[in-house]
Image 1 (cartoon, rainbow over the protein chains, first blue to last red):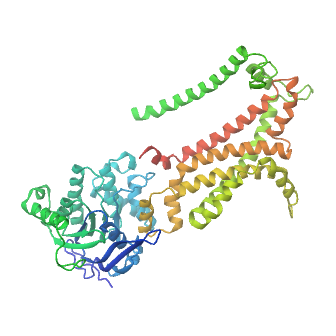
Image 2 (image 1 turned 30 degrees about the vertical axis):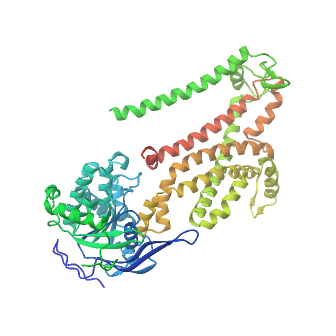
Image 3 (image 1 turned 90 degrees about the vertical axis):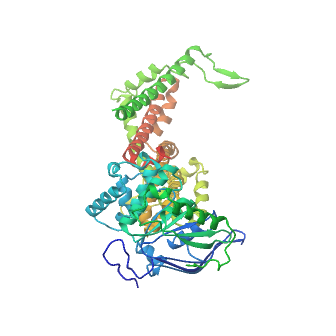
Length: 282
Length: 297
């Protein structure tokens, strides 16, 4: 049973964890019975309001883990709880918002129409939808493009619409699968600044898949470093460089930022640490 | 300003190019008639280009003029254009019924195939096989089976057989095109709908149907052309009176003494085809919002 979060913003007091993954494994079976272990005995917790990045080389299972949390896939072994309920129940309850690498906007809907889609599917009234869409457009700075179609927007703007859509139902958990992966470096950094700001304003927990080390360090409270074949958690690094919402451009120049980047890089490239693998070591 | 004037200019260019095509066709006809040998061009004993006599290739103005004259010598004879127009409307009506039935059946099959994987492997080969059956072969069968249907007040009429045959041709492109269209959404979009816990119907309505429009429109156009051809051919095979098919057969006999006459119903069938294509074009205009994806990406 999840306890309702207290009303004051910013400081989440919810006792139920946003995500609790225990001994999770996912084995894919190929056509000829060959098996690939995408995730091997992974455990992870995400507290309400916490920003956790999953980083690792291709094939380390970071996207698989995200898809399992989103109930887009079913685990072979292990359990997942999202706000104290099963992943399936959490999906049905719309406990999370999601954004993928491709913005995935419907080309025949305007920006507003795309943001309203989840609200529309879940029976929100027209006035409520419009009000919420206007609010979110303001949040992502696209008010002037409300009536535009996705093909009239740049990649970064499309991704901002996708984030607004993910936030439409005020979820307390955001699942993001390399949402800035297809953007150029400049746009990417600007989007990161905005995401930090948005997370500060909404207080949502985030599970963020990326393969960019600076991105993970800049955004996260904790960085989960994963290793491939089989996908395991190699280490979990607390970073949290400054209050959410107060992190700015300057942070990227600071010594602490570089130190954290170096740490993550060493964890990614370095030899396996001689601790228990796949278990969170905080 | 620019954004506004450009589509208008593009539209005009299309109209002009379209008209040019007709003019070029007419010029080729008349030029060949003027310059080509009277006995046609032969390779060995095979004629590869037609004779250019007034009987085989009447002048365009002969065909045109014939349309304005009465059908035959009888005193009460109606003008040719009116007779052809009436027949065209008759044929268009039957083709429209055939098209509607074909589109409905095609869509239904596509939905079943999209919904159930097994249905696709079970049905799709039969759909393709169905189009290898010659129309001439099934027309008399349909007529005979139809003649045995009596349900209370309802009796099967010959025009229904013609419409059924037209729909038999029309459903094919729709079922194949709609199946492709319904399966066209990205995995991304399908995942998204799953995240929203949207069921099959909601996913169909919000995602699959809109996404299929780009595939469906060409299929509807093909279906319209097939329905018109099917109607004309079936009218001949079933010997249904009143339509263009019947006129084509009837007037072909008059070619010896009245070379312009057989061309009138041919123009009629072209007219029916144009109206059908125009109607589908209108559907495309109404649904243009759903075709943005074609321009993007």
